[in-house]
Length: 344
Image (cartoon, rainbow, N blue to C red; front, side, top):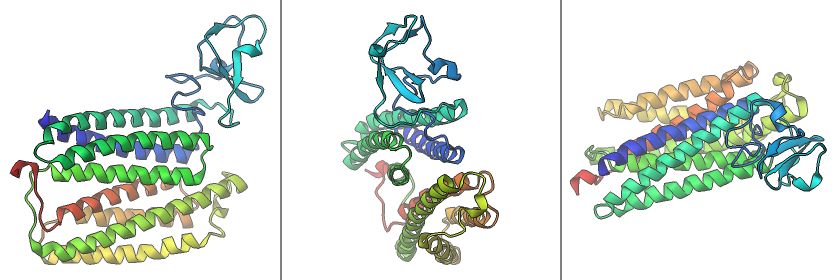
């Protein structure tokens, strides 16, 4: 089982990133309420593809918990039953979490795939945590953090439910995103700490501190970016999907801070890259960091000056999460000393 730990951890990390990508697609397509209940979707484990499934019909079998849309409201079957020739109110209860009752097959399946990936990521972290028991004698921290990740995935699932119940309250979405990044960081930590790479020398202390600074700037940028996104969501509700040129016509102060801080991000990471190259430290991932920052800035420019081209918003979000992961790995890689499982 010990040999399976890292494959499970790597699979978990990939799946968590796929969930982040799927979540970005959900936001881009406005599919967040594609499944108005949780954890099922309209009361089904596999959601419907046609609106007729969600209509009350005579002589039809319904299971407890399945949902119909009637009079522009959601109604939940209170028990297993076969409908008669007329609608019987005793068999149905009004859905109490919210009053959103719209079915769109495309939105439903986009949101369902997002949830399915989340469930797969949860299973992968559970298998990883089970495998981590074999590290208990050598390094208890690996086992403890592995199970913290599982608890984090459960908390993330609960957060996902609150996002739906709040009808996509922006603050809940932001919290959901930050929790995903915390899980990414913990997965990268256990992967790095169970690798066979040797520790780097003391010459990297300065780079290590600079990388922490760069990572901190990225986190601040992500938080500011989510606040800008919240403002954009509010503008979409007020002005409509077609008024893209007006979404950032009068932005809040967070937008200007976010835009200006990007200059500091570029300068900080460019200086780190210069130090790494001049000292021949061999930290080749810094090139990926610079590439991601460059594309991130281009997508930001595209959104502001070219009225949010298709795909620019989710790409901007996904790039930020990838940048966070790379920078955090570099922080761990440049620690003064590391003890690996193989050396215990």
